[in-house]
Length: 224
Image (cartoon, rainbow, N blue to C red):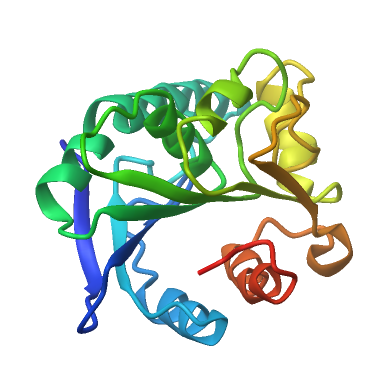
C-alpha cells in the first residue's frame, strides 16, 4: 500500500463524533469491521467508525535478523503515517469534529505521532485508547506533551504478561518496555494507565483487547 487510507465502516444518522481504529504490526489489509462494530455497539458507541489502512506489513521474514530489520522499517513508517498523513486524512474525509482513536500494538505509534503533530483547526482529539501499545513508555517519548493535545483522556491499556511485548518487543528495542506492558512513566492529568493483565493473560490478541473496551466504559474511564 503506497499511501494510507481511511475507510468508513459505519456512519449512523445524527452522528457528531467519529472513532478511528488503527491496527498494528503485520495487519496490512486485515478487515476488522464486524468485530469492531460488535464491541463498540456493546460498549454504547453510537457514532461513526473508520479504520485506517496503512502499510503495516503482512508477513514475517525467515530469520530473526530480517524480522528485526522489518520491524524497524515498519516502526519508522508508523511514525510517518501518524505525522504526515493521518491528521490531513481526518480533516479531508471525516465530517465530525470530535475524533477518538483506538489503536492496537504498533498502531499506538501511529496514534502517538498523530497527537504529537496535531494542529487541525476546528477538529478536536477527544479520547485516545491504546491497546497493547508497541511504543516505548519512557522519556524517549514526550507523553505529557501529546496528552495535552487532547481534550479527553489518553487511556493506556496494558498487560504485564503480554508475551509478544515481553519478548519480541524487548528484544527489538534493546530491553526497553512498551506502554502496552507497563504504565506510561510520565504523570499527566489526562493519562490513565489501566492494568488489564488479569483479563488478558499472555495474549497480544486484538480480539481479546477489543473485548476489554466495554469494561473501560463500565468503569467510567471512557466517556462515550
